[in-house]
Image 1 (cartoon, helix red, strand yellow):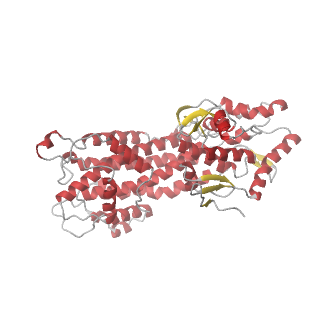
Image 2 (image 1 turned 90 degrees about the vertical axis):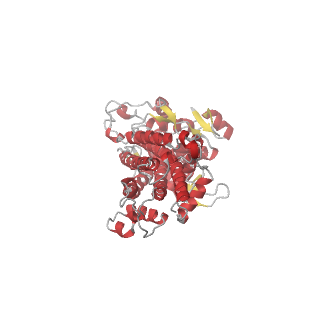
Image 3 (image 1 turned 180 degrees about the horizontal axis):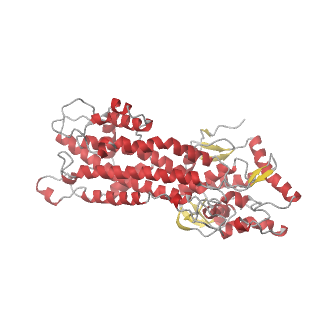
Length: 521
C-alpha cells in the first residue's frame, strides 16, 4: 500500500511523497518554498513500474534497433540514424546543444518548483526513465543543489527544452548551480555533497527536457500568489470603504443573492464581514459609491470564480506524462505524440494574468480616490498627517499614487496573451507552439507588480483609516479590520511628516509574499 503524500516529519515539519498518485498545487508549493522534503516512494509496486520502462526500451533496442531519440536524431532530425556505437552519447548531446538560455535565472523557489514538477511527471512511469534518475533529482533537492536555469528560450512546445537542459546538465555534474545562495559549478556542488554525477541512459535526456515542467512549476507558484492577492485586495477594499465613509449596504447579502456567481458572493460576504454594517443615516454622503468600491466584488470575484478552473488546468498538467515518446512498458508500445504542448498552461497563465492585472487597476483607482479631496469625503489632501503650518510643505502620498499608476500601467500592458504569438521553429517541425512558458513568466511579473500596488495600498488605507478614526472617534472598526490595523501598525508608523516609503514598501512586500496575514482562512 502506498504511503500518504504528506506526513509529519521531525526534520522539516512535512514531507511530500512522489509516486504515481496525484499531487496538488500545494504539494509542489511547499517543496518549492522549502517547507517540505521531497521523498521518492519506497513502495515496491511503484519502483517495479518505473523499472519496467527502461527494461522495455533495452529489450526493444535489441530486438528492433530503432527508437526515436535513442537511435535517431531529435525533432526534425528524427530520420537521421545514430550509429549504435554513439547511442550512449546522444543524451549528453541533447542537453549540450540546448545550453543557449538567456535572461534572468529562475529564483531558488521557482527552480525547486520546476524540479518537483518534472519529478511528478516522470514518476507516472510512462517516460522510460530509471529509478536512479528520479533519485538524483530528489538528492539535489535534499542537498539544496539547484540548477541555475535561465528563464528565457522556450516556446512551450516540444517542451521547455532549453531551460530544462540546465536541469539535465546539473544532474550529470555539468554547468552551474545555486548552493546556499551562491553560484558554484555543478561538479563542485555534487562532489561536496557526496553525490555521484549521473550518466543518463538512452531516452533520459529527452524525458527530462521534453516536457512542460518550467511553465507548470511557475504556474503553481503563480496560482498561490494570485489566490492570496485576491484575498488581500478584498481586505484592502473593506478598509478603503471605511476610510472613504462608504456605503456598507453595497455588499448586502440579499443584493448578491440575485447574482449567483459563487466567487463573487464569497468576496461580497468577506467585505460584508469586515465592515461595521449599520442602518445609519447617510448624512449627505453619496447614495452610490464609485465603482472601485461598489463593484469591487465584481472585479475580485472574477478571479475567485476562475481559480477552480485554473487549478484543474494546472493540476492536470502537473499530473500528466508530457514528454515524447510515451513508453507504455506494460502494453509494450512506444507512442509518439505531442503531450509536451503547453496550451492548457498557456491559457491558464494568459487568463490569470488578466484577472490579476485587474486587481492592480482596481487598487490604483482606490488610491486615487483616497488621496483626492474631491472624492475622499473629508480626508486631508494626499492623506498627509501634517498639521499646522507644516501642511504647506508636506505632500503625503502624492508620489506613492504616481508610482501605483506606473506599476499598474506596466501590469496592464503585459495582459496581451502570449499564446497568440505562436512561431514556427526547428525547420517547421515545431510549427505551432504554445508560448506557455512566456505566458507563465508574464503572469509572475504581473503578480509582482500587483503585489507592489498592494503594498502601496496597505500604506494608504492604514493611513486613511487612522485619519478617519481620528476625525470620527465614534467609529468602531470590525474585529477583522482592527486586527489588520494593529498588524500594519507594527510595520508602518503613521505618516505625520513626509518620509521615504520604500523601506516600508519592501517590508510589506515581504509580508505579502510570505502570506503573513491570515485573511479569510
